[in-house]
Length: 274
Image: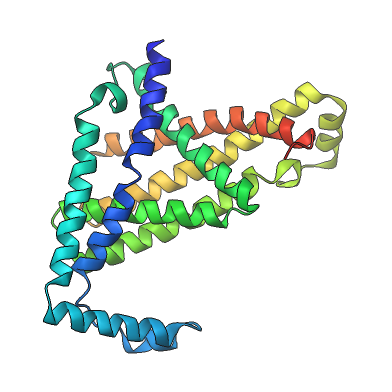
């Protein structure tokens, strides 16, 4: 169906745009390579001195050679090639149709791919840490590119995107910890827990609502923080109605995915398959 195809296009767009993360980090490194490390950085953590010396050496290399400019040029070519690839294949990556259900299907595809990747990483590593790092890094890269496209200088864009990435990663960690924690992730009243145990259908309903609340809440906070950071910094200009629409859509899609995936995951966990 058309809705199914839009969902697949959303998932494909998410996967196809992931390489931009590597390009964004290379671009940021090249554009801020001349920056001198702060004095206190050498005392930050067990590898502080090594990190400080590496930054100091890189700064000197950037000032005496054109390596930083070459890195930025390579990164720009890589990012632009990826963007062009996606633009040239709208039948694979772009939403088709302007109805609300078309947009919803496309967003479900993107959200489903994101949630699937996060869950896969967490289940393989048996911890939400890896997924939170990856998605925090992805958010940082996207905000950095958006800031630079909007004309913000590299150093301010680096700071802004780092804040955005840390918030995204932190919310991802907390959300996944509760989402993957099974029925014990959130402590329920004893009477409700007994009712869930005695009536499996009712239990699945409650678990679904619980997971929908977790995933919907996480997506609301993540989209809300992104909107706040980008708009307060001036790199994104948007009407209040449009902003709330994006936050509302993220919340709605997150809740739908949280319910369906949460119920399925709980059944698998109860059978001891994972």
